[in-house]
Image: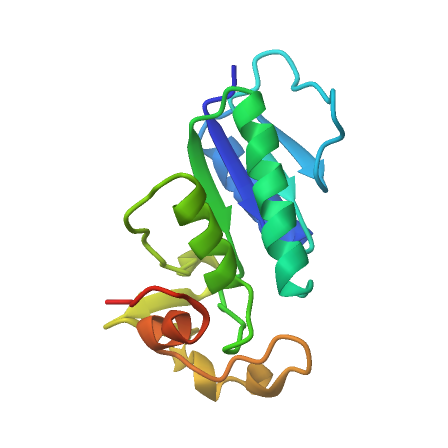
Length: 169
């Protein structure tokens, strides 16, 4: 029975997460999209990764798809969950990371969560609560004005407070 479940906001993040789990020695099954009712997990699979399109989806759909994915993972016996979001935390106050995290926390009665978008292998680090991309503050990189996923804020707590019902610290 799988012991670990990951829901990622896009296929790139899902494949990254799956590859890191495999490198760590786990047997992983990756699904592109929410698995269909009755889908089965392979024999001996220890971790399941689900790739969504919630990074750029309508917020309500992103929350709903994430919750359906987590429900399916629970049906498979998974008890440990990881939400994989973009390591550049590319979002504005209308972004999906906060609403998705809020919904998960409320559904499972988690009093808090840790948000740390660091991915050092890809040059993403967090220092002093600020996100850097290859040693440049996120808000100063060339992608800061991306039309779909702008990256206008480097301070993680300020970024999440724009999106979440909860206060970041």
